[in-house]
Image 1 (spheres, rainbow, N blue to C red):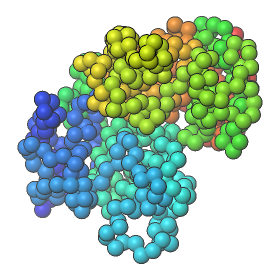
Image 2: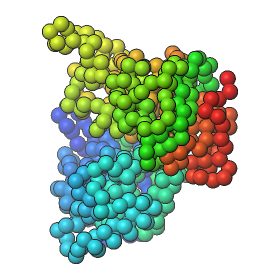
Image 3: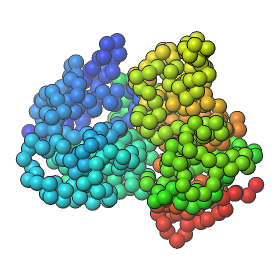
Image 4: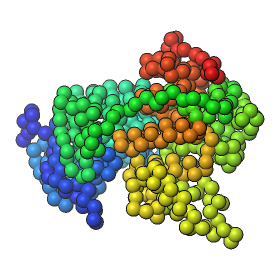
Length: 509
């Protein structure tokens, strides 16, 4: 039996080794009913291993797992579910050919909880409505945006009567407005007595929602503190083993010549009326709620989903961008928000990924890859971006999220772009890797590369950008210079309030 102050779920002295790697060593953590417990740590700190032990994917080499005061063994994901333990992972895991409702209730099929399609659709609608999400529950999951996929994952977990809810980067694809909606739900679950383990690299979110903060480093427990005793600076120092500053605003750029001019750009039913210029050495941030059309503009500029109206001019010459090949020929590169599905080939090596977009450069007269030349290029980027791997022959699948992101950035830098579109460049990476990406953005802008930064992390947009373009429901509603762009002004514009400020596509010189 447990008392009112006893943990509902507890892991004691957990250890787990994978070959030569000690993933966890003597780790303990206690989750209490009605509490949000944040878990922080860099990629590779052991967070994912702990979650997999909690959900039955891995078994610990030693240690105890206790639920409601009793020792338990969690041998499978189904067993974890029977104990009332559910998890939402960083990367959505949906069945693309099943509809939204089927994905939500996939775990219920053998439990007799649903009596027909009509009831399943009604319950799915009800759960999504509670999340403030509008989705057609009868439509297939294939083609859903990352944000929509994450919403379905959250609904899937909530559909179970959970006692312990693990949230692994649940907001990585969400805008500030959607995060606020999610946090309302998290607080409701906490008030109903659910124990919540919240894993996030967004420190501002952690310190908004958490009641307690635990930090892992290199597979070990470093600290556990009540929220009142924790600070972002202290948490970062525990995570990286040293003091590290928080996100610092980037100095304003000295703009060079205009590289890109966009006028009246649109694609039927998706976005329209987008107009802006971007100059050499400038960072133009794209802000707005998820679904506002920011990524769609990036896809159009890279020729993946071409615009159907308006014009694009590069160096004053109007161009037609109907494919990535045409965009690359004009010096445009695009780093996708979905690195695992669209940005990288995980079974291939670091070197193969970095050279893939311009592979023809590395072929000899017989059409064979000049391996030494490929490795030399990859080694240059491995050192420049501090990719943590023993060699460039390591498979990308074996890297942490932050190092995968660096490989993807290296891949596009190797095309020598003049305009680099960065779509959620720090999504799901740890605080140390995020700081390195921010430093790289500053460095690239100083080298004269124009950067179009799409991010749901509004503090990141504001700190990195020279100007901020705000979109809402497929339309451009504002362009703000760095002096007039703040969180309140941007969110006012993004959410459709009358106070939205407008500026011309060409900012004053």
